[in-house]
Amino acid sequence: MLKLDTEQHRQTAAALQIQSIPTLCVYQGGQLAFRQPGAVFGPQLEAVVAPFL
Image 1 (tube, helix red, strand yellow):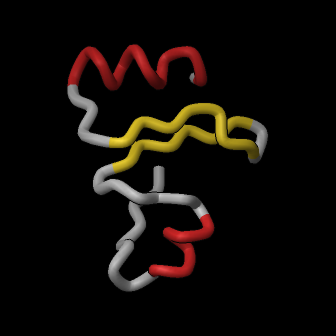
Image 2 (cartoon, rainbow, N blue to C red):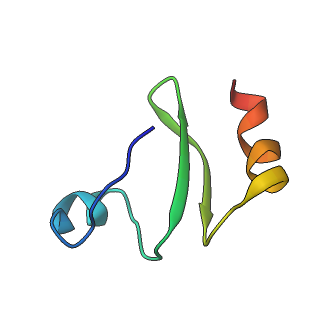
């Protein structure tokens, strides 16, 4: 898990195409597998990440 301070690391945020805070990104094999702008909580978060575990 990684948390990025987009204020301090603007170039990285731009390279990752983060336009909304928060944004959940799941990478698999070094490739972006899922992106969800906006907050994700509880059962919805579990449902999002479960296929990648």
